[in-house]
Image (cartoon, rainbow, N blue to C red; front, side, top):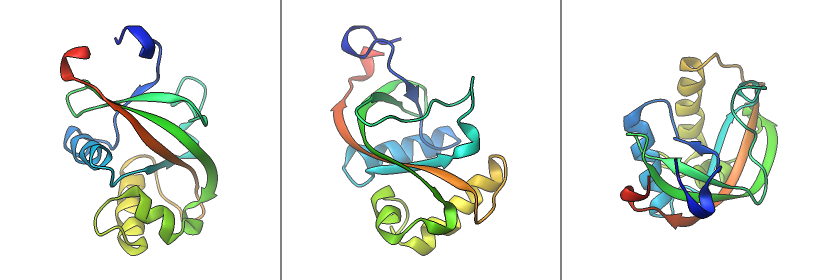
Length: 137
């Protein structure tokens, strides 16, 4: 639990494994990853909290330690098939192409509750606010 100015902040890790969490976090820290998305179906009462513009969240590393603070700058809901090349590029993964984004995200969603081309996604753009020392956690 963080004290001080980030007490009570939403804490989360990217991806669905410690390895993926660390990989995606590293992309955030070098400025390559400035966007992310999740299935709208996962944002339910008692589940994930919808991102909100202006909110600052704590990103955890693969070991669950606070590593960075990001601030949401845009939130949109769109279907998987409507995600464009610009958003795929801003997610910063793989070769940053829409083709690889679709391939890898389809695999991810199939592992995590199912996939459909018309599934709704919560698409978030963010900015890195602060890197956290590992001893702040």
